[in-house]
Image 1 (cartoon, one colour):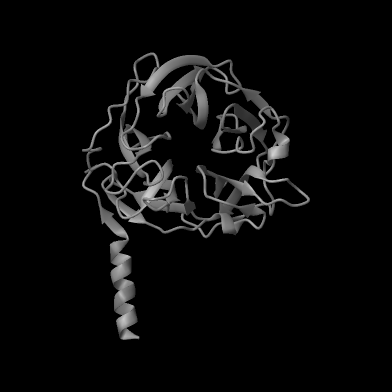
Image 2 (tube, helix red, strand yellow):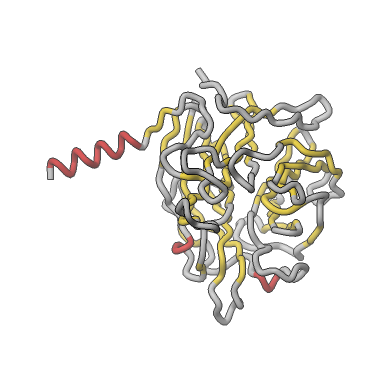
Length: 319
């Protein structure tokens, strides 16, 4: 029993990871699709988890992880409080997700695949989990998928309902954007577990997947991974209304090393703006063994975004 206690204490100590501001910021597992939020004085980072072997030629994403920091240098690993097995209707991998806080609860919107049953013929689907704490435990909030493939038929492929991003506007209205191949949006009810109205589909210039939507100084931003550049880049649009029309603004992140995909996660924290993404630069890493990074993000006076400078140094420790 004493030995087990020592092992447990050692494991707990290992959960504190001193990064010293180097990219990638998480080095002990492969992570992807970063989603940051700030709760009280702490930045929480939600990620996917790549478990593909070096020989695999497709994604294997086992679960979703949570990390936290108060200084952008020391990251605590809170483990994997959510996986597709949390959802009785789900099968397949843990695709991109985003967690947000509302009314004292934390809602984690995830993309995975739906079982073939009397509800759906299968294909990508979006679920929502809920917790009273940013690190869980999380449970399926509604016992069914929020969006299934049969609800979005603008494209013929079955994997278009992925990569949800959610934000709550100043007037209290919540919106969810998502999609592969086309971008879709819908209003959410205040309870965050029901859609409120029709789903709208549109196609920003060069859009492929991975949207991230937020508001800053009265301007709405739609940031996304772009198609046609092989590998992906990050491009964006702006609008004065969350429902558009959206004005294309250009490329802000060039190709990342070692990975076909990239994925934006944007946050302001302690007076600075941060751009999270993933690449494939860890030893034995690659497109299916990715790693989350963070660099500074800067805005021009008119609200447009300056090009992201990718670094191996990362960001400085907040003293």
